[in-house]
Image (cartoon, rainbow, N blue to C red; front, side, top):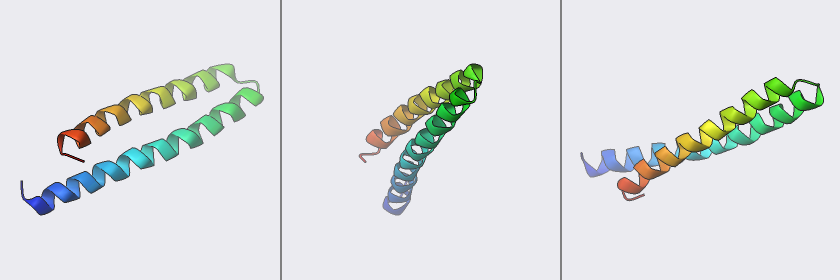
Length: 69
């Protein structure tokens, strides 16, 4: 892998980690809204989705660390 390709991959992974974290916050806001609307199961699904997103980010961060980022 060329140095340029490595930097591009690192930049994309860094972007995805931040992007996912931003969306996790938005999803939690939706979860709170669902709960306030009396939809506890929707709230649970959204919170679980955020948990999975955090797990995904851990994998992306591990990949980034392997690249030296």
